[in-house]
Each structure stands twice: as C-alpha cells, then as structure tokens.
Image (cartoon, rainbow, N blue to C red; front, side, top):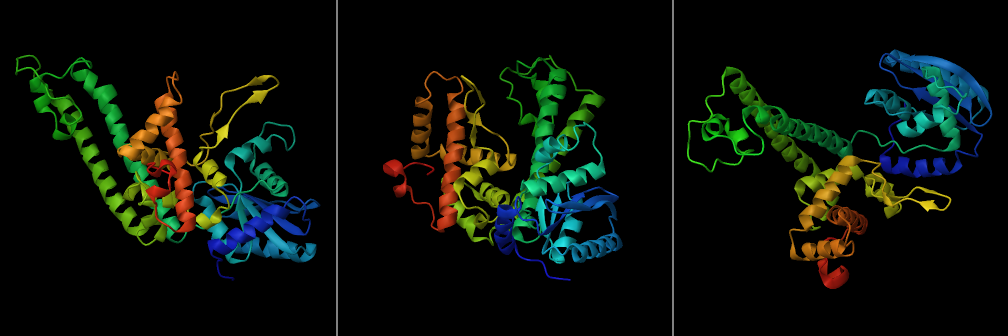
Length: 401
C-alpha cells in the first residue's frame, strides 16, 4: 500500500487533472455512490466505453480490498495510465473509502451535491433516482471535468473543521433555547410587549432573568407563583442554556489552542475586527491558502461573489450568491461588525452607507461589503505573510483593507 500524499502535493495534481479531464482518454474512471451499508460503483474508460456497469462495495475492509482487486484487473485489461475516482460527499460515510483509495494511489475528487442533482436528470431523461444511476452520473461529471478538490480530513485543518462543526452545533443549541423562551415560555408568563411582573421575574432562574428587562414598577400582587409545570420548564431551559454555554466556552478554548500552532492564526488576528475565535474559524473554513490561486476563489467559497439574473432586455438586481460555506460568511460578517467598533471602521462603514442613500437595506449591504473587504484583506495578508498595516490602507486608516 502506498502512503497518503499531503494536501499540497494533491492540490498540484488536482489542477493538472482538472485541466485534462475533458480531453484525456487514457484514464480509468470510477464513479462511486456512497451508502451506509454498501457503496455502488461504475468503472469506465474516459470518453470511450463502460468497463463494469455496476459493482457493489460492502462498507468493510474486506469489501474495499475485493473492490480494489477488481479495479486493478480492469486497469490491466484497459491499459489506462491513471485511475481517477469521483465521490459525492455524504456526511462522513465517504471518508473511509476515499482514504483507502488515496492510499493505493488513486486520485480522489469530489462532486458537488447540487451539480450531481442537476446533472442526474440529463442521463436518460427520467426523474427517477437509483444507486447505479448515481454512479453513472458521477462518471459523466468526471468526463465533463465538473469536480472539486478533496482535502484530506486529517491534519490540523481537519481537526479545526471538526471543532468548528461542534462549536456551531453548540451555538445552534443556545439559539434554539433563546427561541423557545421568546416564542413559547415567555408569552405564557404575561404580555410579551411589557415587562414581567416583579414576582414572576424574581421566580425565574438567573439565566432567564438575563434575557428579560428588570421590572421598573414596585412589587405588586399581580403575578403569582409560576406553578410546578412552568417552574420545571423554566429550570429545564436554564439548564440547557448553561450546558450549551459551557460547551461553547470549552470548544472555543480547544479551538484557539489547536489554531495557535498555525502561523496564519496570528497573522489574521492583526486585522481589526478579527478575534481569536473568528480567526480560528477563518483558518478552519479556508484551509491552506496555497490551495487557491486568486482572491475570487475565496469570494465564491464564502458566497460573497456577485451574481445577477439577465434575460433579453431585462436584468435583475446584482446580489451576493450566498453559496459556498455559510460559516465562513458568518465569520467575515462578524469581523466586519467588530471593525466598526474602531474610529476608522465606523468612518468606512458610514461611507459605504452614504453611497447607498435611499436604500432601506443600506446598513446591511454596507456590512456585507465590509465582510468582502475583510476577505480581501485576509487573502493579501495570508499570502504575503505580513501582518496588517493600517497605514497601507486607502486613506491611511481604513479599518479593514
């Protein structure tokens, strides 16, 4: 068994591969539809013929080994120079097989779920879906060159992404608790548009009291005890909030500890608005800056690229695509929001709002533009290895540039 290649080597190989997938006929292509119990694959010679229409791969080491023997046999019979495999990312089920094939020297790439969904209907003009059809669909997209780089889940960037995913789950749990209080428990305790009675407010757990304004009127007899049911509901919600906040604190500490070993982590914190947690999320979501050749690739990754629908004489309003990684976009927005706490950041934000005079969404659009500016700064600083210097920004003091 060969050893796994590092991501830097695999990125170079991916660029060479993507440039020739639509023309090279000397490759054995593997399209594998991932499942929980077993996978289904199709083997074909690129742009030529189907070698094996359908083969089942049990999700076991023995199943992987048997499949590899079949691939080697097809490789010898066809005389192809290379083997390329396309997978559709399905949770983490694909990782074991992807690592197995990579260790045997196969070039593994990914296919976007959205692209696979749209292309599937072009296979035979039907609306149905099956595992063999999905495997054939992946081979077809390989021949079209519509593939994505597969970053190995191991190493510091993989660890960071795992921690970021856990942190996001914990924050989602805390947000769900706030929504339950706001939409379910709080209206049951009194009119939502006015403060709670003093006696009711005092009976709440401390974490729920923090979400409510303190009563301004002196204590009155209005508002009695909560009752056993509502008391238990409030205490349960407060316990869930405490657990979520404890998870968030622990995960943020581990996240910053892991990120501290990466040079880019300290560089990004030199940008106004980028703190320890946001910097760690940026590093985790972007990965290695060497994987990218131009800043526009980062804009697409964050979903901040500008798109517009157009047909004939009609043209829609330009907007951001909102595709890519939402957590990266959120981190950039938080960085732009943090930058407005500085004098230079407030001035830059005010200028962005002023040029949109009359637009009721001017504030939000200005903040999104600030997020895109932060991303350009991240690109420049990370690529150059030089910390942020405010004197080099336009005007000598822009908050993020």
